[in-house]
Image 1: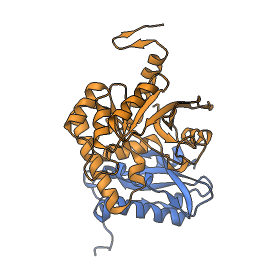
Image 2: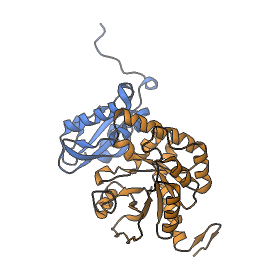
Image 3: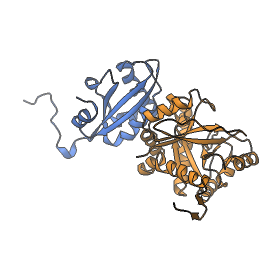
Image 4: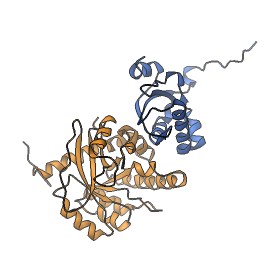
Length: 231
Length: 119
């Protein structure tokens, strides 16, 4: 089983630990690959390589309105292995679901009393190949009543996403190396949020690995929509 | 005369148990009693008293390996995912940042100790 965690913050974004420390902890916890997130900016240096684990470049768009997000996504698509959108605002959530260049919509329920997604977003995400994230950190760092609200929103989203067969990814969203968790344990939580256990385990493994693999093929010019060149 | 001892139930009526082998990864060594307390608090906070009662966890103190920080928890077979999730929600033990990692789940105590505790 190949476990991936595409949403991890290092000191290159809002995290505390270096890329090497995050990658080291990920490897200790059994991951084959980790996505180091950086916020979109004009200059993007290549990430360091670490022995024994695949480091994926995830770029996060944090925009206050859909237009800003769309411009940023278009600018960075050719350079990023994974394009993520910081969810929370409904207009941004919806716009991300309708944008085929977006790979993952992160924590759509962030900072809201409602769940952040409706059936229109779920269906659009499915049609445009956008995956929606279950962010473990949102649950880990909330307590009691807040945690109950957060889990309730995530469960409502999962119900919609499962109904419309939209892809779901489960990540740690860690900002320190102590925020990471083994893939199978994140999957347990995804299962409790309403996903079937097999699908929950896939959300921390196959689904994420496939997004990375396909994007890498596209970036290398070996894959276009509807065409694939073998060899 | 009937003794004050409950008879073993026939196999069909016995509760199904699972053994979760875990390892605690932390910056500095932690105390077992703090870990045990943290597991209970996490389970109670996460699933409430009713969920914890259905999980029926038993922290098996005798089998805890202090050096490797590995231990075994017995729980009901239907609650394995809930206990896994509760373990993943533990952040601090003995004032240390801690990650509780599940190494495996087995159906018998013997396979748990044989495969994971090197006994």
